[in-house]
Length: 102
Length: 212
Image (cartoon, rainbow over all chains, first blue to last red; front, side):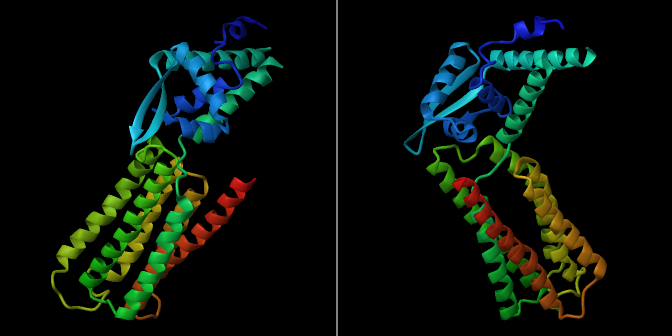
């Protein structure tokens, strides 16, 4: 089996905590911090750490606003994040296809 | 081995993407509110003897505003409590899904309302008036079913109950009942009792899930 696709997997996305976050954001134009936290059943701290990593990689944009005087944090995938996620899915599909051929 | 791992990852991604697009906010309270209002309004409609075409349409249009506004306030309250935007992407998708069928129902109703004029005739004798509640039921079922693509699975089934029930009664014809009883009864059964039953079901199952 060609190990190439596996080696090309983006290590920022290919992580147990970050892949679900990127998957959620890929399905929605934007999601609030609490929506992501509750859907994935993560702690505030854990989610913050992963979001910061994704933000530093340029994959996720974080916007902080106020709604009714309460802070509201919304997250969305950047164009680079969308490309990286699409590429990640393609590589996973390649791995599955290769295994089927063997 | 590597293929299994990749397939599992793809499955996880698909599940999560589906979950991100699902609307869940305040479903049980909305159903309970609609059920209580629908049941009470049907009983009141019968009690008050509202049987003119204009009276019937006007009465139920006015009644429909109560759960509509109430549901919006419930959704808003929950969104504010969770510090989330009220007009979230899933909410937008659900609103867009229900809009065509509900608009069709409203427009047809308004046309009938205008066409019947001030004719002082019993319910059911003008433009098949007794069929109107069944039309509402079927169109409402279509709206709910469309929203079901962005909501938990049970909602689609709930929509189908309205569609099949409405069409079934349409096929069966009006039973040997006074028209007023039939018309308000249909409204009470579908928009009252069914919502109430589904609301109670959601209330207990959602609480159970949260407790688990």
